[in-house]
Amino acid sequence: MTTTPFDREGYALLKRAVDALAGVCDGAESRDDEGFDGGDSKAGHLLAFLPLSAWPPAAFHRAWKWTRKYHRQLELMRLDCTTLPEPPLCEGEDRQVALLPSGQGFYVTFPYDPTLIDAFRRIPGGARHAHPIGKGKQVFHYRTVQLVAGAGDALLAFAEQHGFRLGPGVEDLARKPGEVAPAEVQHAYRVAFEEGQHRAFAVYFPRDAALNQEVKAIAGKAPSYSGAFHWVIPETPQAVRALLTFLERHPQFVVPSDVENALRALEMAC
Image (cartoon, rainbow, N blue to C red; front, top):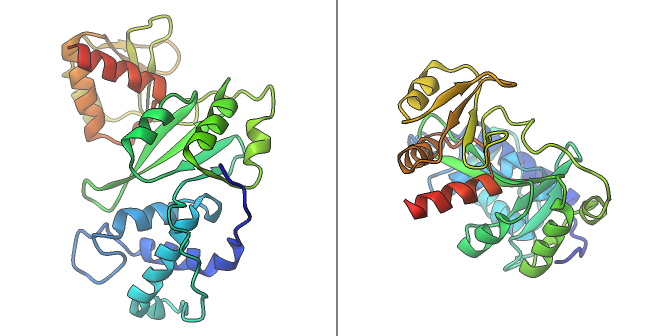
């Protein structure tokens, strides 16, 4: 891992430009010359969502090239990026850990890589999130780590092994003892282990008739009124396959690493 300083604040205008393009973009669902095109849509929306501190160094040059590509749109938005200096290429520096705005966890940003994904799943409190783009099925993914027991040490070891850059305050927070925050309470749409049952899964979401109808079609499901209302899904092969299909259709659900690992293990055993 590396903590070498990088002058991010000098590129605040670059962040404004990306935010502006994402703000008028429908996920490249239509050819309207507004926002990002199809090849840039997911990355553009992700960088718009993330704070500047969570951008990997390599992302700055990519975003700077967008200001040239979409200069006519930006001019209409009264954003003049022509004097913005070209950032260093920072080739290969595409992995970043930064603090969440709440100060109670971390953004972990990296490109798709099965090895990294597998290693990330072993970090306590790690979760993958998805945001929809426009009105279609496109989503962009991002990952966080909450301050649950053991998360800090595991995250630093992960960052060291895989060459992540650490943002300001990351190492101090990760090494801070005694900080434990619940990983699930912030997420209205989530899947967890059913309390008291190691091989049953709890599916939480706000009242939604359409989602309820989908869950009701899962064999063996049962409603639970313990705490917040949720559905309990058994570990049977049929139910696990149906639950995984449900989660693929609805990427807004947060699935902690240990829960995802258990689901995938059961899927493999089916």
